Image 1 (cartoon, rainbow, N blue to C red):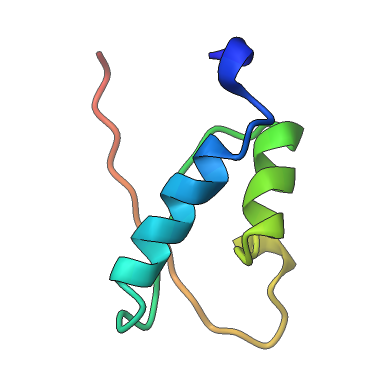
Image 2 (cartoon, one colour):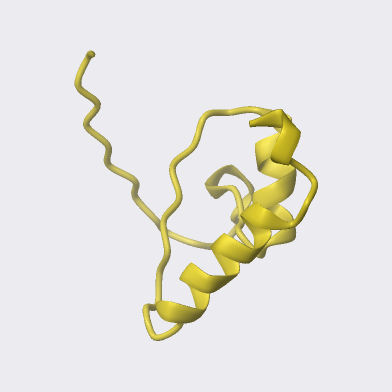
Amino acid sequence: HPAYQRRGIGKALLQDCLERYEHVRMKVLLTVDRPEQSDFYETMGFKNIRDLEGEKLNTFLMVRSL
């Protein structure tokens, strides 16, 4: 909700999740392609798979229609 954005809530929640699963080698995040979301997740250390060089990764996804 816009009224709660830019207050550090999302950052705190994501940091808590990342700390809880620190032992997991790969973390995969799927989200819609919007610049503000990309900016947020990149500041949290995530990389867009399109920007990875020298990595051989596959991503598979199945989405059901609602």
